[in-house]
Length: 163
Image 1: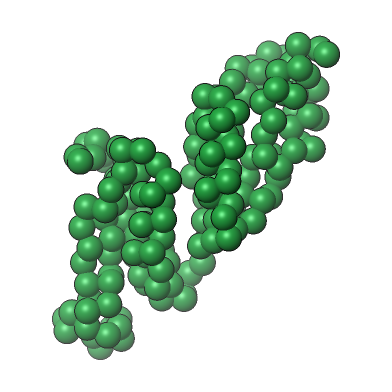
Image 2: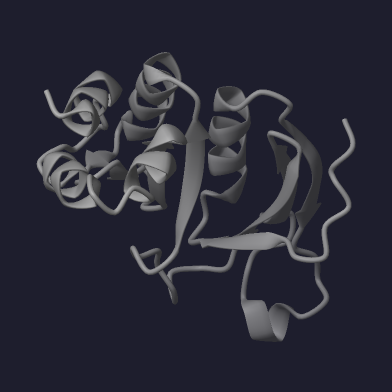
């Protein structure tokens, strides 16, 4: 499975869970696979201090897009300043991705969640962008979704329609 030619690739820094996380993510999204796994060697041991053979980098594809997962140690952790957005066409997709990505993780607010590795995701309906573009309905749609954790598309459609 070949990745789309990208000029920019996301690199996710994990303490030591890079391979586990990459396998988790590729099990959830279609058109996904592990491409390559690189391991620490003797070179650079004086700097990285990692045992020879430990996973260093996992190159993987999520729904056709290339990612890198790096086992860099505990120096850095994930936070909400960066999130991965999952564009969903309907409630079934929202429900699917929400259930899979929150397993062992945490529901947040407004379609945001943290997975079991601490990575922030936004699982939201593509239709929301259209709703938010209507200046007459923007406020009531915003008020409705601010009360949600997982998006309820039917409720948002009702609010958008003025019901």
